[in-house]
Length: 249
Image 1 (cartoon, rainbow, N blue to C red):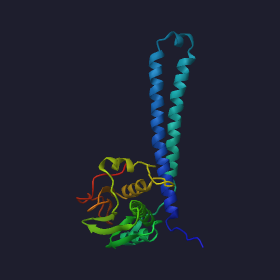
Image 2: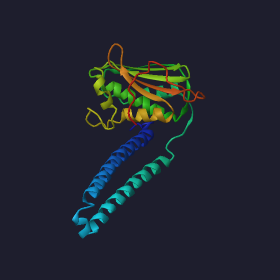
Image 3: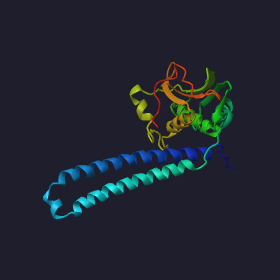
Image 4: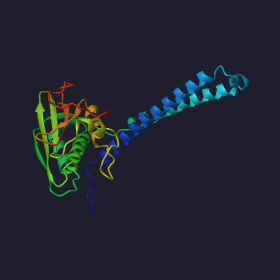
């Protein structure tokens, strides 16, 4: 009997959201490049004999610009439409329950890796499936960093007006120069992986006025930290010591 993934629907929605956002960003950059090129060509040929002999040259350059603007607007319309679909619910949720759910359904294939959970409770306002998914992404990333086995530490604590979730591993760690690279969409060194885990976790954190930060573990490895405001606390500033590198949107 195939076991149903309790976070499968949330993962599908989050993956689609990341792909659409990445495509929109890349397409808008392409459209901007095309418009700049068309403008440059227009400036160069405006006084040339070819434009005086054949007015269609200027007209076609104008058509290029108009079509690029229309294509950009179409991309924005698709993105807005995808965000309008009801994909999530916001409720008062137990952060401890979300942490436990993430640990329970983490997909860890390599033998010899266990997840050590030690978390207090705290009430946060969000979609619990999204938070569980975000934490699971971090747990799975941590597990993949430890070839040959090890312990993923999963901690949850109340720090001031925020709830802090820390995921640590004892792998080789990430060099400071590579932290920016690993937060890019689709960056992965693992065959068969999309490389969206950190992006999904970061987007979920920001959606609910929180942060995702990365830093070095103690004494080795990597530590990922999600901080979220407790219910009723609003967007309180992050507590010190949460790390320094936040993934790109």
